[in-house]
Length: 268
Image (cartoon, rainbow, N blue to C red; front, side, top):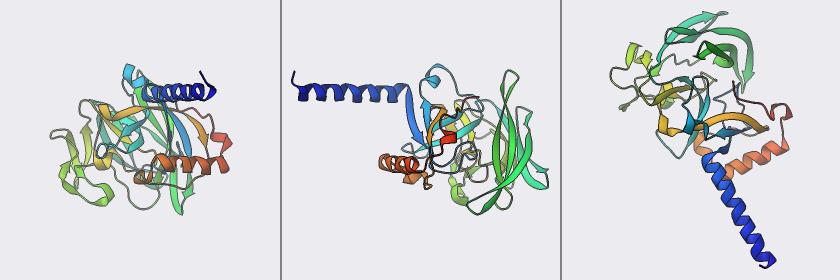
């Protein structure tokens, strides 16, 4: 076999191996927006385990990548807060002089503790530590942000309310699953079978299940488990993300790296 032919065969084998690994085992994604801050920053590049959920089910606390239910060409990343059958309740509370909300899952409170205030893109946020029960008596703690001023959605819209507009043609909670409501917002509900309730850790800057509904089990791609690279990059909306913008963001990250975040695990 000539050198040129051998090189082509080797390239084909490498590409096939990469595609096989990407399809069944591990896939790389980058974080385009601030919806998961402070856990994941804009410009974090993560690896997602795609095999895990072929062998087990997503658990509370998992950071998952999934196909956006209303446009499956888009990949979203959020934290699982409620699994099938969970009873989730939002409760308005005042902590350290700030009006925020806490949650109860199956009657167990997700405790929140004020840590500090911070600023991001000209807005002030309050940083809290949240405790999330994950079953078997185990609890994970992670940090969440709340805006100190402005919009705060403490519950699920009964109908699609992305961008603040109610769309009465798209109910997002099955009939009978909303147990309590306040001014059109469902404050207590049961997560349907084969569905998951997900939220961003940046609670007042995240378009998540509260706005467009539950995530079907078949939409979940995998679990994020490590930040393999990180750098300062421009923010993007999900609609801006494409094959080519991924390379562009990686270039920005290589030029402006954040070494302290590289290798950070996302497994609790």
